[in-house]
Image (cartoon, rainbow, N blue to C red; front, top):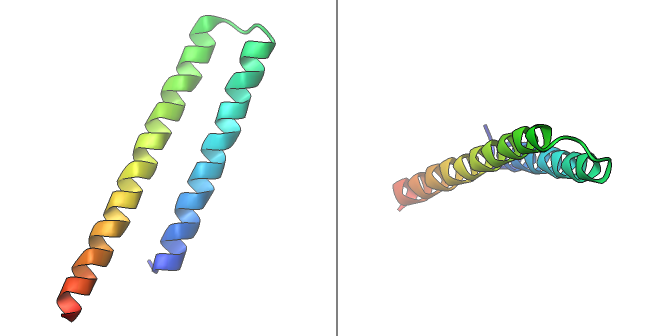
Length: 70
């Protein structure tokens, strides 16, 4: 996967997370149950973790390629 494709994938994941956060805000505004809100927050937390891993993997592979070129 190219660097540009990896960036696009990460940006798409972040936009999805943004949508989920808006959904939680709407749930709280509409008075949804605490258990439902917490489930969504846990899902968001996991999604953010996965984005962090994707960024680290991308950075690590870029660094490895750069060190091979030296």
